Image (cartoon, rainbow, N blue to C red; front, side):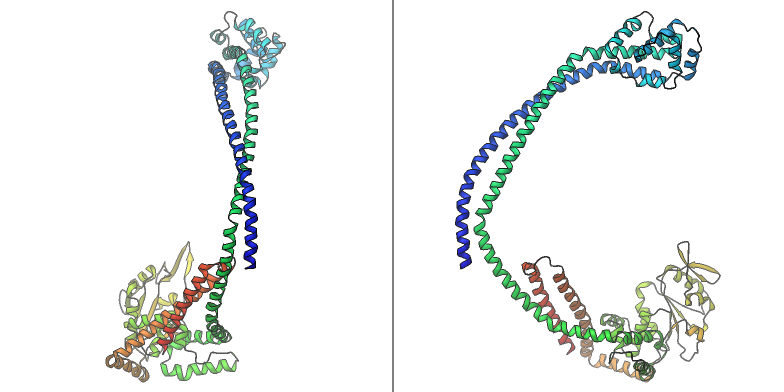
Length: 573
């Protein structure tokens, strides 16, 4: 209330100032309109005068342009004069009268005082820049006295023309044309002198008026600026009352937003703290988890399920423990190395749902060395056929006659290739197993049999055998990733239980499948929502409480996170 009373007093004072400012505004507006009309009248006068000046200038230029073709013709004729022609003239001890007369006229036009002296003439035409000086001469350089002299003594005399000069010498003909053109152009230039002087006076008067117009326009600009400032000040004062109301409303809205923001972020605090604690735990064990996972992918594929779980993995855990390398307790490698949606896809591609087959599928999904699959029952073959169904899978055998040709096409075009009967392995495969790919001239090449062929980066190869008793040479085993699909009693028991469950209680099997799918979808959706939440906060500009859109976004995301978390808990239950 105290703030409101203060604002009302300020509003009364502002109203009085606004009334006074309104009177000043009307006065300044009248001055600006009067000055603007005067400048418009003066601008119209200047436009008319400018038009008159342009017309007179065009008239003068028109008269000069009548003599311009003769000047251009003379300049073009000068370019036909050759040095040999000038040397021929210089050779005369006593030149023909016409040649001497023409050269004397040229030098007189150029302003040479001793133009009648033949020695001076020869000296001038001997100069390499003689023709250039003649060509660069401007008619405006020809004084009235010299013009009359040249006109009287040469141009108006009988026989002083191009034909006569051309007969006298090939050099003097163009020079005669040049002298006549210069004199005629100068005559016109003199004749329009009064017109040019008149244009000069008009132009000076026009420029003076233009300066006056510029000053008047500047005054108008000042009046308009003052008027604009008064209008802005008046508008500001009239809006102060609304500003007070807006300020009160803004403070109330900020309080509401602050309350909503605190509630929204508080609800997320517990979950974030739990995730942070889990993340710290994972970070302390990341080295051990990574070592076990890497060893799992590289070496465990050769062994059956019992050896893996009862011998290999416990032995690895003991080694890590002895080395004081932390490892997460109850680490589920299948969960750690694959996503639920990927496992659902494998199941759809006919992969048996026992632990051994899922582990083997993970190895086949992440191998670095080409896999060698031991598949006595043919389950892996069915799974691989479905897995690569959309990539033009090629199946071949070392026993087939066209084996090498089929392999070459797969390597070249990047299609997957399954090679059966690996116990009859051909040494031609060694460069592929050794990854002996070299880059030559922008191409990736690999040796295959007697020739080098292009190697596509999309190429993949899987070796298979149905003979689980075959002993592979150490050099072969070291260059492939062994994957053993041999069915043991425990594996068979797991698969049979799965089939019985599908037959007797398909609802439970469907629920299990839906659970895997929901866990994958909910985990992904929860991660996306968290990223959107943090991005919305980080990208907010200015005060966060002023951003109503951000508050609404946070509320929406909070509701979605709560819904997703609830569904994840329900699916887990």
